Length: 517
Image 1 (tube, rainbow, N blue to C red):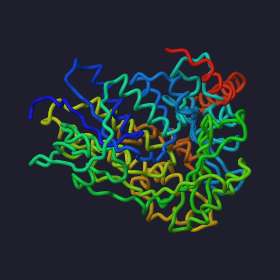
Image 2: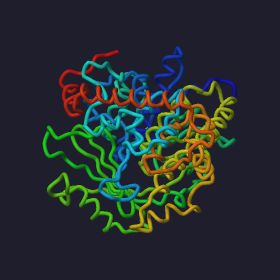
Image 3: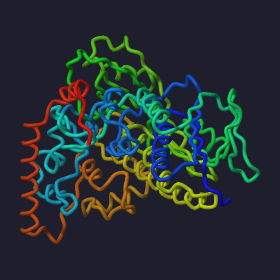
């Protein structure tokens, strides 16, 4: 019970498996002399789901920590830069209806809450444009850095859009050749347990038994280890988030010089929404919809209509059908088994939370890696408390995008405004925010998945009203806010005059590479 945890077995590859393997191996290699092993077992010829094509800025730190060069990553995985999301037709559904959720925080966000000042003098542009320069960069199709900016450094905060299939292959190569991860291509035929219920090993078709002390379930929706073997139940949230289907398609650019959007574009439809992600070599486009409110044929036609704006013959493209079972496991770590990725749960890809959850799950395991089996249950308890909270906050945040809509063109949008479909935790926050703008102290954890700024961008992008403080705003406070608004406008002007076009930078990186830090 007290000897060290030396062997980790990860069942399942893909983004979840290989990111987890890389994160753990890099941390253990750095902190320990020797004596541990990480084995990843994955079935051959299992297709990658591939809807997780968007990341959060945390990916820059993750890749740097596991020793990946940003230049190699960009070249190999058809990467483009992501500076946030543009939500079109989510409020009224009209052609001029859009707002941004950028990745740069509002000006002076650590010390000043500009939301109350913007609300007091509303009428001059969007909230995000008033407090953050990134909307202007995105609107003009500019990159978040220059070719002279070192790897992983930013002028404007950024994440990535990536090809999930290529990313998995890239990580596999890096983990096996640079980090010492053992890769077993084989089918798991049985999961074997100790008498106390811990997993002892997995049986494979050709490699026999593979023993371990910590097992990580990255087996996808079937949740082979945590769901099936450990019998951990699933908590659905389809009463809050209605989308349960998606149609996904890869769309080629008209030419090699076509502009590449430096943000995700999410466009509301009658009974769902369409994602539009521009990689360096193609677009990834998909229609997320609710089968309770429409059917596949209608969703397909909306998708074809959307693609027709950029492709002459959309019906010639191959479309994949995806099921979305919205929800998560009751717990994520039981005994010596922890689930990461789709085996832990799944939500629609509205705010790119899927890969983020993989990153922060793997990071927490690496940082609090159990010294022995005795400590594992304590760490598991912490892990479960942390991630149950995080899943609930993500569900709240996704619901926020829907429930503030003003659309009456379909029951889908109307039903999302039903108070009975809104979690109590979100209702409580919205009541608070009717009288004071979101701020850091509104949340329980110092490290939130979505900070107060994210809630501000969505709330005020969708027209939410916060009443003015009955005590009023002092002249000094207003003067300081006006200075911050002016400062942001000046930065936006400088940025848009100096940053390159997104396509231009991607082409230069492929040709010359970025300088290492």
